Amino acid sequence: MKINNPLRISIFLSTVITLLLILMILFFQDFRFIQNDPTNILFLVFFFFFIMVCTYMVTKKFFHEKIKVIYKNIYKFKGTSRLDKLNDLDIDHVQKEAEDWANAKQNELEQMKQDENYRRDFIGNVSHELKTPIFNIQGYVETLLDGGLDDDEINVKYLKRANKSIERMINIVEDLEVISHLETEQSELEIENVIIEDVVNEVFDLLEMKANNSKISLQLINEASAVSVRADKNKLQQVFINLIHNSIKYGKKNGKTRVSFFDMGPNILIEIADNGIGIDEDSLPRLFERFYRVDKNRSREIGGTGLGLSIVKHILEAHNQTINVRSTKNVGSTFSFILEKGE
Ligand code: ADP
Image (cartoon, rainbow, N blue to C red; front, side, top):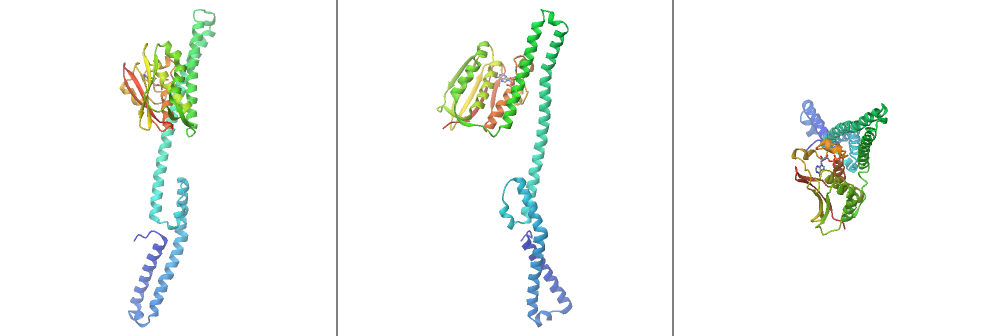
């Protein structure tokens, strides 16, 4: 029997004390104490219970009550409510709870440290990304002010370049805004039945000009039996915009982008495939990190921010899904994810 609650502690202590008393009596008075008068046995029984009640009260008051407070606090922090179990609380149980709680807090602290480092890196990256276009703009404006404005050879050229840098900054700020909204509204997805073909066709319309400029054809192949998926429509549209836009940005002239839907039991598998420049194997694991680009110069040249795929990942994770990619350099890339079929 484990001595781990007030009752057991008091039984243990009163047994020990009573045995000590008996030993003392035997030592001073020998066995006749018990044999001579049976009421002495009654006295011992009474003594046993008296000690038991006293130790029970003391342990309960000064020891158990305090543990109870600690235990209550642990549960308050944990956000659960098993306080009804407080009356049969034992020390082993509290010890285990305290250890679990300490481990959970340790993990939480480590996670917070990781988040903190991540934030610090993120802020560093944002300022680095914004610094380049700002300095470029400053350079062009200074040259124009130093007389370039009157030089017809360069004035329009520099203004156009400054404008391009401003567009780049706008793209970064817009993507950062999307990320910030996603982080604050994570639990506020408006999940509904979304006709997936409609979403893709809307995105095709939106990106038609860009696709035409690069002579890339956009195709939709639907092999799924269901017409709708459970998703947040606007966010799903953002996923398609980013992935299809990338397939155009990193596509080859006269290439094609194909969006396909396949049945997968209760889900629909969605693939966005292109026959563009592809991605080397080493870059694949880092592809969805914020600000990661395979070819920094090419991405910047075409107005990329390095945030598009991380937004896609974020949105799909909010839908409890993941984004996958297969790619072969110079052959093409396929991005895929699944969504639950609509009702
Ligand atoms: P960006 O704004 O630079 O396009 P993304 O986060 O959308 O940022 O993509 C990250 C990087 O992944 C891109 O810079 C590009 O190198 C690579 N990438 C994304 N999509 C494709 C694709 N379909 N084909 C080839 N490379 C791609």
